[in-house]
Image (cartoon, rainbow, N blue to C red; front, side, top):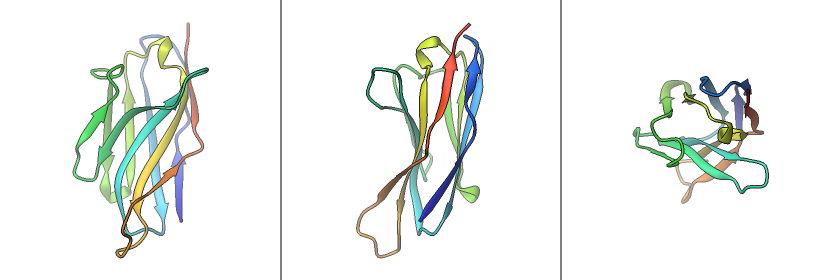
Length: 122
């Protein structure tokens, strides 16, 4: 079982900054990757940023240069620093953890946070 503690989103002005965090705990063997996805009104969920346990990252084109994902492996915590926020960043942001349940697990498992609303508006 995995538990995720996500930080709160909020109402931000265009051009502003916000940092999201996501801390994983519970019973698992290892975390492979952590990341954030988002779902804007009327749109499908999309990847925002993802970081593996080796530090490899990938970002949606729409956030490159503005968002930075980082990770503290010792704390099983990931951070998403969002700068230069735009109204089109408005969405529910979901933390995702991809993990192995046990040493013997042949595949990894995804676990999702409840999501936090980020609204960018003047």
